[in-house]
Length: 209
Image (cartoon, rainbow, N blue to C red; front, side, top):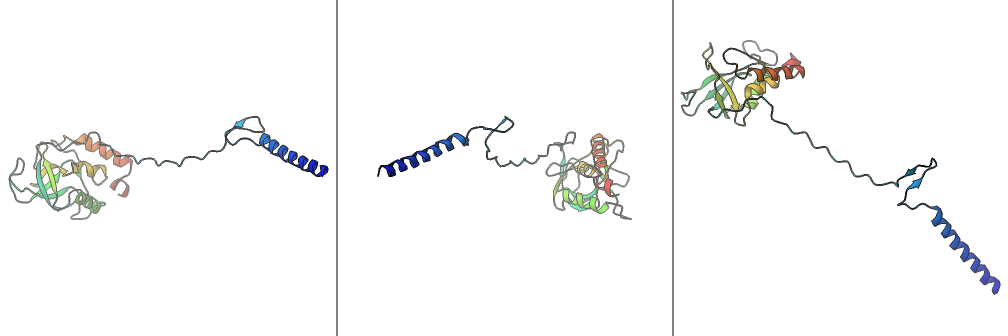
């Protein structure tokens, strides 16, 4: 009987010794672990999920002329090509005194011709102007120094109802070349800068033609 008690006591003591040694030898998960080289390593942690970088927002382009307060509103009736529109005023205004449909040539941009021979990138330029000034939409016009050309077309800078200067948008997108004809050169520098940027990027006709 005494022998059995002694055996049980020895077994229990051995079990306690094993538990004590395990606690002494195993590192705490919350403590630093010493590596064989002597340096310490932090315990593994769960990395936070990567955050999505916000998309870059477009900024207003410096130097692009805003629509003047005295611009006259007109309605788009037809798009001839990338730089010529048919517009109509609903009433007599400051620059257009008739309510008949008139042919308007955009100042400062020369887009590829649709007729008599369709030039390279002419269709894309026409499509782009139609996107910027859809038939039936409202646009705003203002002259430069001279509002008539040799073909009896009216010469205007034209803004969309959203405030985009169509002359600039076409040149910047590579749908036409900047055109400097005296005396209508008020916005020529801005348009020429837009053309240089389009050329460097080989945008539109600068890459296709």
